[in-house]
Image 1 (cartoon, helix red, strand yellow):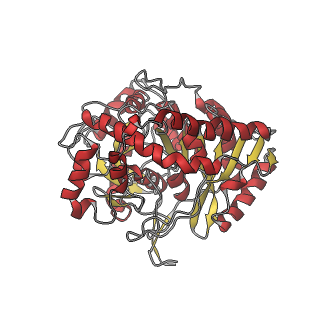
Image 2 (image 1 turned 60 degrees about the vertical axis):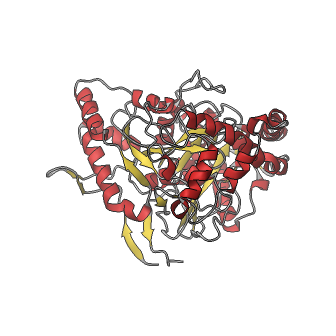
Image 3 (image 1 turned 90 degrees about the vertical axis):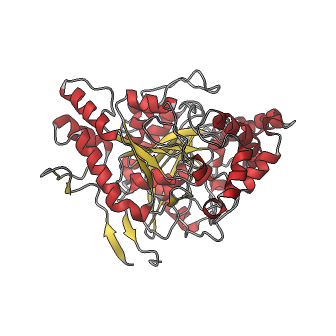
Length: 510
């Protein structure tokens, strides 16, 4: 196995003049301590992370844009800190946004498409406003699977026409999963301490697991969807990505907020950081969803060891707590997403800048830019959605309600009640597959769909490794049960200590 280089997270890195960053700031908690005690400044952090991106991202393709205002904002926040004025728990800490989230920091919102290269939003998405209120600095934009993996069934996760192919930092020949590929890779590789991803089904949790970090998909509506390029109002959400549960929860606390324009808005039940307590697994009843397993035997073996860790922390393990509606959920999800996508995207594009104001215009534009946009895969999902009647399909409302019930009331909720358990667990996804631009993703299966369709919270935490590739464990439960999931995830993380920083490995390694 040929090692190209080991990426130490910002360690011993020259920032400005003779200043040397002599500490490995491997978590947000350490960054906060360093800022509080004066070991570093927010301006030095921004310069340092920008230098890391400049020096290492050519191999990863995780970051597509750097904010032209980040350093100026860092300097302003340093000045406020010197005056004893802290805006919030993320004061002066850089955050990367997935490139489907509006921000008015001089950054285009492209969804990875060259057709939206001139889509410069005039205002921040609601969640970005929340982040800035908490003192976070928008460092830039992260690459993604173009159109959040909703253009073709033959796509390659992490590829976009604007950003190229994002690569897994544990093995550059392998997929980062998606669609929040750049967000996950940038955090895993130490190019940024925190990142925001979005998920419709698996787009936070899969890349988080495959890149060895923590990802939280919140309850639907807990984080505003305003200003995010959509797929489905019934499943879309943004969520935090970090190297630790603590970092992810701190970012979640900064993101949440009731948005009156979001029809599914939820009132936060935080501060969620209050659930970062020891002993949180003691007495908890944990259901093992065996019918979300079986697609990766070596991942399943790692999962069995994770169950031992949960048991050793005082959890009661209830085996074979299977979701009986799983097949029915999978059977209908895709059609409903396509129907919702047509109208949701048209609504967003109507207020965007640039020449492409409808899905029909995008389909035509992709043909015009075929050499760049359709180089590896087509746009059959776009065409399927356009050929539908969108939300005017006669069965739309009825089928949405039925699907939500299959995943929620008759799915996760019924399973929790039947087996008298507090949470459910399963392996998140198998190890990363080889990047293949000819055949597309070699995806085998995951635990993401029930919580995604129900709109329920889901947290993935590093679980261990299959050879050199990280895999994650999923914790999920009922609506607005972020509290119990955070307690479980935090205590599992503390007991297992399974995350380790990546090495950049050559493509012919295995």
